[in-house]
Length: 414
Ligand SMILES: Nc1ncnc2c1ncn2[C@@H]1O[C@H](COP(=O)(O)OP(=O)(O)OP(=O)(O)O)[C@@H](O)[C@H]1O
Ligand SMILES: [Mg+2]
Image 1 (cartoon, helix red, strand yellow):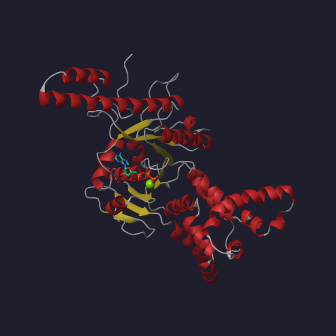
Image 2 (cartoon, rainbow, N blue to C red):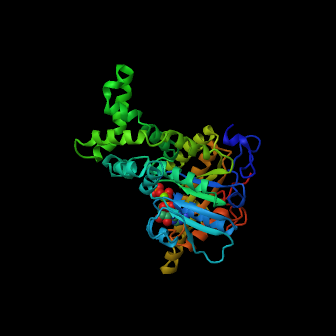
Image 3 (spheres, helix red, strand yellow):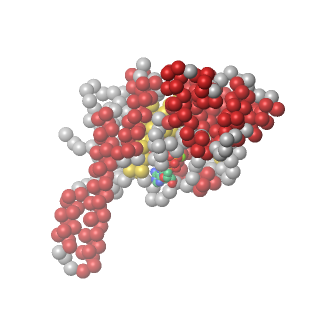
């Protein structure tokens, strides 16, 4: 069953035929629902995943829930305002005056998370050998995919603790939103040792199939090789693999178990994109993937939109009016012409953003959209998060400009 077909209160119903406009997303209801236990914010790099996660967590705490947000590499000022001065890899309570629930926040420390797994699953002596191994140190701190893997691992730990009503998960700053879903599997296959064994003992692989496999492994490996110096490398890898082999029964099962968590009822994905072609293309791939995996999508957050203050004057009419005002004399005329041109530019930008959103809706008519206007500056304090939380969870229709929050510009009549 695909996400779109499974049907749920939070997901907008698909109208008969092809709807012209994106349906709304009720994020307020989603995060307040006691059955919602995990919300994962995904999207391509820099679109606002971390900010959206923090704002949704704040809104959930305001709705009375005990919530933890797992942030990944938050901007320093945002981290500070959440009380995350240093990495300690455990949730800390954020002091938010006037909320009914509780907001806790943490910043993922991927190396610490990895170290903790090693320590928890081996004897102290063996753990010491592994932790001191240079290959392990590279793998645990800079391997592409480690962050995604460890984010899932941490999510699994938080969920297992069962201390939280809701866990909001930010995802790593990868180019593609899909990396979050793909990397743990890739990583666990790698850690299972198949690739490593082929590399350290190519003779064992034998035959053409083995050769093909080994060269794929070598490619995969090249990133690490570039980072680890000296001829010690293969010996380090061998030592690491044999220590790992006896340590515990395979990373693959672990990754699979956490991956399954993402499919359980109570987990929802929120895809974040900015109104730009690349970000929306990535969001589109991600939506298809979730659907194929049967993972539930709450909707698309279209972040940093530029709705005009008023939509009663079109860009063209504002331009024409500016031309005619220009004919007048003096500073007031220039001022009015300037204001009209600013409005025309803003309308043009909003039209472009709406066109891009409409294109997304044509491809995914069932996916609800919540447009979040760009704030004047960065969102780096609780006040900024509150404004964003209101944009994410406020009523869909009751907006100052009258434009529903599914859109940048009002829908055309007729
Ligand atoms: N609605 C908004 N209005 C204004 N600024 C915003 C908005 N949303 C996010 N930002 C700003 O955009 C920048 C990027 O946001 P954020 O760090 O949340 O993105 P991200 O998707 O987590 O990035 P990365 O992929 O690097 O992790 C931040 O400086 C943030 O303050
Ligand atoms: Mg981020």
